[in-house]
Every structure is written in C-alpha cells, then in structure tokens.
Length: 608
Image (cartoon, rainbow, N blue to C red):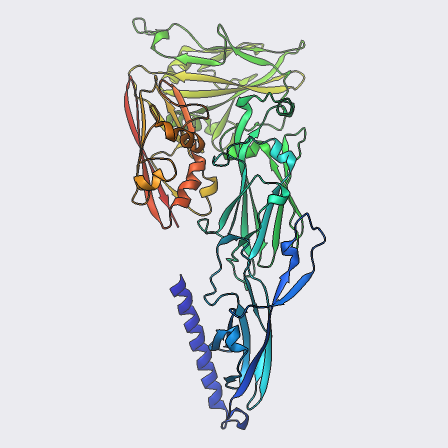
C-alpha cells in the first residue's frame, strides 16, 4: 500500500510539473522578478496545547488553550504548494538559525513532533502534535516569515464506567479474560489500534491517544468501535445487593457500538451508564466531550445475548409472565428427557415410552395457544427443520415456529389434547427424533386466556448406542465446523465460536494446536500448550482454560460429560492479537466415548 501511495504521489508530481512547463511555453520570456531567489525565515513554531484534553473530573474547569514553543527537535518542512515538492527540511533548531533560500513562488511550512512522522497506533499519555502554516509567498530578493501552530494530531479517548453498570457485572481477577472491560479501536487495524479499558473509576481512567487513520483530509473521518464485554447478571438485582446471586444467571455478553466521523484533535470522553426498565432494555449512553455532540445509544438486552448465542430471544412482543401456563414432562421431575435404546423394544419394533408434556394454566384460565421453537446441536436436524418450515410461519431466518394449538402443524408427529393441556409425541415422532443424535432444545411457548405468555425449555437428549460423539459449531442454524473461518480487524473482537459436543460420556477430549506462529513456546507464554487435554488438564493450565472458555468456570475436567458446550469466543480476539501477519492456525479436536472416536479440525485464518 505504501508503494502504491508513493506511486500515486509521483504521478501527481509529474502531472503538476508538466503543467508548469506548459505554462512556461506560454510566456514570452523570463520575468525579471524571478531572476534571483528570495528568502524565508522561520518564526515561532508553537504548540497549541488544548488543556481540555488534559482535563479530569477533579478539575472540571480546565478548558483554556495554552501555547508553548515547540521543542528544538520538532521537524520542519518547506513545501512548494503547486507541486508538493519539499524545498527544504530540517530541525526547528536549524531552521531558526538561518535564512532559507527559495525560488520565488508559493510555499507552505509544516512542522511535526518527530522527523519520521510515525504516530503510535495507540498509547497512554502519548499526544502527537503537528501543524501547517498559511500560504507563504516568496519573491525575489525579499525575505518572508512563516509561523506554524501545531495542534493535537491524534485522538484522545478515555472511558469511564458508572457505578451502577459495574455493579451488575461479575468481578474477576485482573488477569482473567472474562473481566469487565471496554475495548476501543480506531480504524481497521485491531492489532495496533485497539486498547482494553478496564472497569476503572473516573479518576483511574487512562488517557489513551489513538492514531488518526483516516488523515486530516478525510471527508468521513475515522470509525471508532466500542465493545463492552463481561459477565452480566440477568437475575433479580436484589440478589446482588443481598450477596446471594444465582450463579446460573451470569451471562457472558458483548455490547458493540460504532462511532463515526472521529477525527484528530477530538477528545472522545466515553461515559458508559446503564439504566433498567420493565421492558428489559439497557440504555448504553456515550457522552463525548470537546468537539463532538453527545449521543445516546439504546441496546436491547435480549439482542445483546443473541450476539453471543447465550439466550433465546422472545419471539413475540408479549412480555413473559410468570403466571402463564407451566409446562412439565409427564411422569418425571426436571425438564430433560432421554431417548435411547433402553426405551425401544427391538423384538416388536416399538417404543415402550413416549415423551408427553403437561401444560397447566393458572388462576382458572384455559390454554389459548401453544407453539414450539426447536434448536439442536445436530446440524442435520436443523437443516431438516428449516426445510420443513419453508411453508410454516417463521420468526427468524434460523428458527421455525411450529404452531401446536389450536392448529397443530406437527400432527403427523405429535397429538395435542382438545383443551391444549397435553402434547404427546407419537411413535413416528420418537423415531424421527432418534435419527438425530445430540441435545435438542424444544422451547414451548404457552399463552392463557388472559394473554399471559411464557416459554419453557425442554431438553431432549438422544443417545444412539454405538455412536461416536457429535461435534458441531452452530452458526445461524448451520454446522460450520468444517469451514475455514477468517478473523479480521473488524470481526475478531466479536467473533462467536461455540463448540457443542454430545456423547455417551466423554473418555477423551484433546486439542492440538498447529501453527507456524503459535509455537509451543509462544503458547506457553500465555499459559497454554500446543497439546491440551481437557479430560486430564495440566493443573497450571486450568485457570487459563477456564478464562478462555475451554473449561467452564469451576470445572477442572470434562471427563464423563454427555453434553459439553465450550464458548471460546474470547479466545478468538486473543488469537488475532497474537499474530503480527496473516497466517493460518489449525485446532485438531479428538473426542471419544464408549461408542467411538470423532475428529474435527477448526481452520482459523488470521488476516492482517
């Protein structure tokens, strides 16, 4: 790209020089005024320090601009305005001690903090200053003077999180990747232009300076991406106050927002607050001081969970009500039903048990409507459901809504009582489910005669005797584990990687990382190794494996587990940042149980 831009610059210079030569042909002879050079003296090179940029809440009145003379090491350029050619360059110390001889014409003088002009992608307390003078006309035998005022050439950013927001996120050790943090990046180069602001107080918020990727002449400015992530409490907030949180209510979330037209000399002071409402929304408010107007962004908590595939979205606009009909599995406690060989009589080729659901309305109401949404770790079942649902009403591209009462679109597979109080899966339905090994979630939405609705998740675990474990990576209703996945600066921070495994009881779960970049020594520097055993993990690796999502929090082994879901989305961003150039990385999974062994490979390409 640098060579390309340089070529464009040389072409532009050539065109301008040609135009000048054509102009000379039109003149009758040299002008006496141009016969001898003129001179330029450099006046002050001033640095316009906007003390707003250094302001903190402890000094809210700061905001006046202070002018100070530049250091003698600042680098000065004198450029011919028409051609862009550099006529003279040197340090401010050298420039201030001489008269610079120039061919008569129009020039501009620029100055910058360093000779090489390299601005760090992002750095703490690293402001960079640069500036350009007004046009300076040099005439023969005369001396002109130019002064330059340098201004902030990068983008100051601070992030402050309100106490209310921090109160609903779980606290982790400062080394954990699950801790509450706000990642900010400018432009597309996430490797060098991003920074994690931790859950700090107002006075601890560091002042980070981001490079102006778009440049001073951009018409659209930069795009700044803000990603807030952590474990958010979805239960009753009084549980947190009382110190009795339900551990199952912590959900890993990511809130993403992009800010446009971000420019140099701006202070993007981002204050993030959270407010709760009965509609289940979170107000994610960004206040930007200095040159940009305040902005409020509303993020729906439900959609927030959809981003990381942790929660199902409520399919209708009806708010769920605890008094709505309850759903249970007939003849057993809990909401998990297992289909395997033990409930099938091969001699008579018949099922000896059937899945039956009881729907119980409250307060003397009746069942008004029932429908179901099915999700599964088995991609083949999801494909079959998608094909079946082409003629059915859908609420999302990857989810099909099956009406069960008063109209039953699954009448070939299940029967529903006339009052809607029971749903019984027929023999054809049991056989159809048995074809697909894995864990299937049937979300039953029940509405009563008072229009109160809620959903209940029924887990159906299908274990087929002699079958090896299933390993899938579901994305938008499809298994994408066999596809190559490309991590870029734009998607690495939000890329979702969730591996679902179904087995008869895991006896082996190993991960082998193959990469020219991530050698075993490199992996050991972050607490990992090229070979990971999740059944018998190395003790020193357990905290890292838990932090990156390979092991659930508090779990030290996956041995014997029948259903495993490990979310390593956080590791995707970590993986991207470990690479300095484009390259691939393979993750070989070996999964085994009593029924056999399954091998899968995650093919991740890091594009820089």
